[in-house]
Length: 199
Image 1 (cartoon, one colour):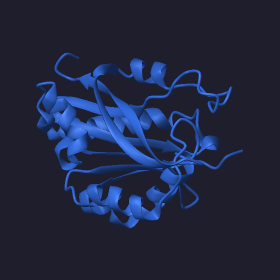
Image 2: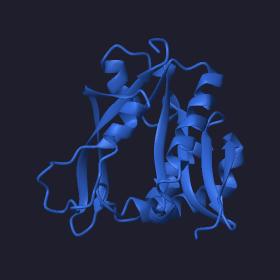
Image 3: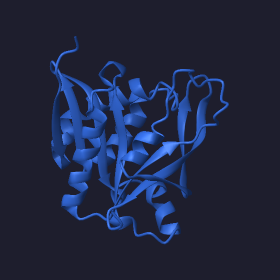
Image 4: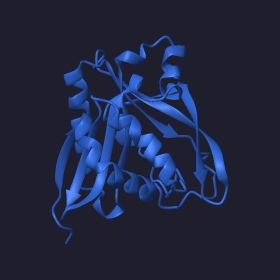
């Protein structure tokens, strides 16, 4: 039987002691489909420094026996790189009204326990407390016929839709990362959005 877990919330500068744990989790979880990310310590330091610099960032950590087994991150969209908020401005949406969910990471043996819902609950509550209209995240686009997709893979689209998020086909960005066996590759990611005024 898997040990019980706890959920910890860390805001702004409180996240600093946890950057290495989240970086290690990102490299472990994103190594799998659909990201196929080949971990890079230098990139992780640069990427997570954005969260460390934001006073309104949030880490939601799932922990068991002193180890981080899951993590979800968020920060105001305008505190992230321009490549993240430029697509919103181009669509006439105010990026200052968007709170961005960076990632939801969970080791395989901890899935199916409701932790994913807790990740969304806490980040949404944090965004509400700061007065944001929209919460958003981005998902990498992959061809359904890609032979690298494992037969057992299940996309999260149904889960996200039930949480009130809708895929925004006209809202996308490109990011580069090292992919296993291919080196640096450019990827398209499409945003999913929830409008809390509409809700």
